[in-house]
Amino acid sequence: MKIDHLAIWTKDIERVRLFYEKYFQVTSDEKYFNATKNFESYFLRFEDDARLEVMRKPEITRSERDGLNEPLGLAHFAISVGSKEKVNALTEHLRQDGYQIHW
Image 1: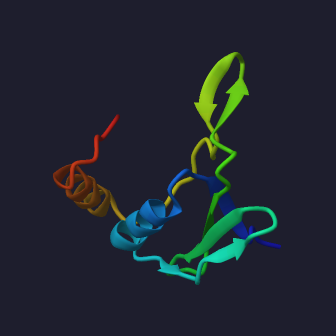
Image 2: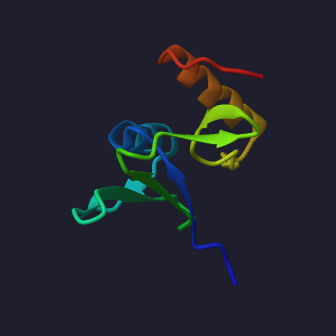
């Protein structure tokens, strides 16, 4: 057995797709759209065939958990880039592109 894919809700699937294509070299399937459910998604495939699905429904924006209004999505998942040096290089690339890095 294996995990087929992880899925996350997002408000902007195009932005998320472009982020993973640029920084993690994923390939994207064509956008899936279900007009009846007003649902759209992309499957993003990593080099080792692991997949991440990014999904959007306009009415799904936030969730209530423990009295906090938090974005829907996944708590976290880990992507291995191969070495500490590659982590540092990718972190610097993200920082230079304007992303805030929180440690």
